[in-house]
Length: 265
Image 1 (cartoon, rainbow, N blue to C red):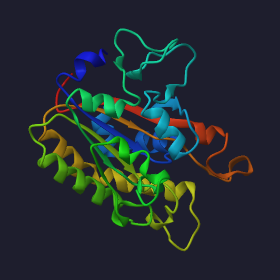
Image 2: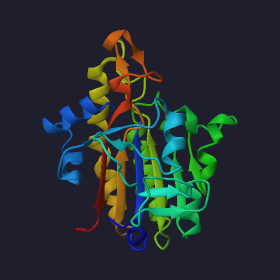
Image 3: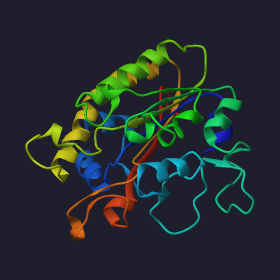
Image 4: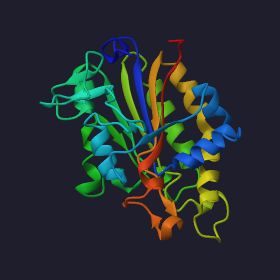
């Protein structure tokens, strides 16, 4: 698709399901346990490889235009790119920016850029956790959006709806970093037990149950080009590993989907 044309008629929603594993997302989708995601996609998740093994590295790459790469051989043209001499993955359909990140690029096109943070790299309580939020016109974070709040997806979607409803005449680039899947996710299954693949799955089921809140608000603001992806996966004992920021198939393999909301394009 030609992103140069898409952005002339669509808002953009970019949502990262922080720490979501591909195998969990794929299994839940195929078994019907995430019906709202399946309805929005009208298909299954796509398997891709992340450019980073933890939140900060992945998002820095994303906002330079390096989204997760399809898990198949060959060159894969990118949707967005920051101008870079010698790039082999930009073509005539790539939306190319001269700015140092795509957020500033969208702002130059007249989009209102908004960040609803989730995990610690979006807290804005020190220099490091301000780097990514400071790319945006507006950025939001509080404890009710973070990893320790069980209702964080509901709170994030309600905040997004409020922002959308107050910005009806302005094209928007809306970014949401969902924190629920990041540890501790045992709160979605059994707080007395350790995080597990099962509690990871329960967190995604809860996110799915709250998606209609966001979908309703999006449709009130016109048409949207949407990107749903994980920034990285995580391990729960596989090959002796626990956590992420390491090289393992369950960390670098992520679910990805791009689709439209509000029209039939």
